[in-house]
Structure formats: structure tokens, C-alpha cells
Length: 364
Image (cartoon, rainbow, N blue to C red; front, side, top):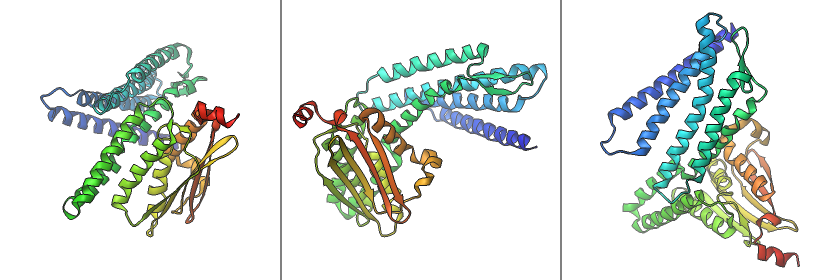
């Protein structure tokens, strides 16, 4: 009875999602402009692919465990299409993101080529899995089971997560709110509106440039980007946000946009959760073998025991931790108490983050 209820719920959700994707796709076809827009076409392809993916998953749920000859054909094929269309969807989304960002700046196509090769390899492995069950297999009772190498099929999900992080760099909600705030100053305080537009342009330029930075950047450049972000936030919440910088050294390199998610969390999930606002502190210390960077706030805080169960809500923090570990041989520590605030501390290896000439001077 419990399994039947789960099956019905999943079927309902899958079919509703497929119907919604189809309705949006039809709407796009109706309002399609006469001019050819590659982004428009790719988004339409994403919706259609998503529709078929959800229908395939619905078929896999609906027919599994059925022993008639038709169901024995549908279940393996439906699961095959779920895997395959999932990868195709990632490729289409990557193409859409690349096409959209290419309008804003010059972006290398190498990443897109790499994704295409990975997706091709992934689809070929799904085909192989039909014969050896490495990803999944269907038992004698027509039930789906994960194979020993199911984890391999999820590798591209990590790539998809990175693409979502790239898209998050654009932050449409934040930009819309900032533009709304600027528009309100156009009549009341034109000089402030002019300043806001200038800051917005600089912030967008830094964001787009960050997408194409493959090397580490000077900390001073990252700090400048944070200052632009906080300036835009202060346009809307001038009396709620206080910013303090305690920088002992800036003679080191860090990955682009490493600190942005931490500062954003400190503002949006920390001090703006309190009616009285609060203070964001950026502290940098030069230790014997590490560079310590700390982002603190005296905002709402949270229970750190919930970090492992929150998931997507803290994907920005998790991404920072992963980049810190992989690119800087570093580590991250989080301290927080509800009602008291949060401190996120990064420890970056000086071997990875100091410019060569500075590093040589330091260890002479």
C-alpha cells in the first residue's frame, strides 16, 4: 500500500511537470519572434527534452513490477531514456548558458567542447549498461535496481552543479532588486541614481569577467568586487548594513569569486534577517604557512548541525569549500550561533596563493 502511494505521487508529479513543460514550450512557439534567436531555440529544446524525460520517468514508475510482455519492454527503455535524456538536457542547458553569456563577453568554447565530449561518453556508457548492468539492471520481476557503477553516472551531475553556480553569478533577482532601487532614486536623488548605475555597470563587468578567469586573481581585485556588491546592497538597505575591513595583507592570489557567496550569505541570511541590521567584517591575516580569510556577521546565525541536511540552500558555501580545497590546498571552518551571528574562516596554503616573487622573498 505504501509503495503504491509512492508510485501514484511520483506519477502525478512527473506527469504534471511534463504537462507544464509542454504548455510553456507551446507558448514559446506561439510568441516566437520572426528573428532567429538561438537562445530562444535552445530554451525550447530544453523544455521539450525535459518533457520527454519526465514522461520516460513516469513510464518507468508506472510499468515497473508489471510482468506482461509490453511492460518488460517499456521499463528498460524508459530507464534508458531517463539516463540518456538527463545527459542531453545538461548539454542543452550548457549550450544555452554559453550562448547567453557569449552575448555579454568573450568566452572560450573549450568548456562547451569538453561538456560535449563528456556527454557523448556518458551516453555511450548508458548504452553499454544495457548489456552489462553497470549503471542499472532490471530483475526477473521487472523491477529497477542500481548497478555497481551507478555512482559513475552521477559524475556529470557535479558538472551540472558547477553550471548552476556559474548561472548564479548573474544573480537575476539581486540585479532586478538593485535596478528597482536605482529607479526610485532617479527622481528623488539623481546623483545617487547615477552613482548606482555606475556601480552596477562595474559589478556586472566584474561578474562576467569572473566567468572567464581560469587563473587566480589578486586579492585586491576580489575585494573590489565585494565592495561593489556591498555598495549595491547599501543602496537598498543603507541603514541596516555596516561594513568593516581588517586587512593585514593583500599580497596574495585567490580563485575568482571565492568570497562572493560568503559575503552574500552574511548579508542576505545574516544581518538582513534582523530588524536592526548588523555588521559584515572581512578579516585577513598572514599566518606562518597559511593565509586566513574570515567573513563574519552579527546577524541571525544558524545551527551548524543543520549544515549537512540543508542541501541546495548552502550550495554556495559547499562550492567555496570545494574550490578552497582543490585550488588552494585549503580548508574551511564555520562557527555560528542562532541570534549571535556567523563566522566563516578560510585557511589557504601560502604555497598555492602567494605570487612567486613574494613567495621566494618570504622564505629566504
